[in-house]
Length: 83
Image: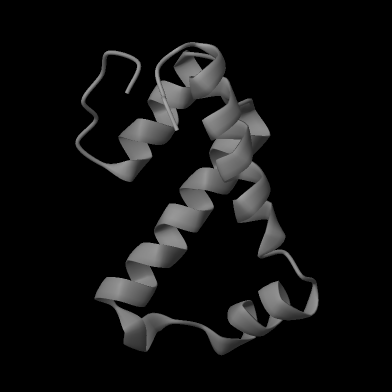
């Protein structure tokens, strides 16, 4: 991605920030999504149901889609992604 081979999602978020694909708020959001995913996959007993409920009630799940679309658009416009 952009000439980098980040070893983790957190590092990938940092690269996207450094390359100005994401702003600071989007970088924080991506890192939060990655952290939540890690808890769900690796430490599922640590999932706080009130957090899941809040995400669903406030319909914040669409933010992940918006972020993915932003990344795809930026990478396509730089000729890095061909989808």
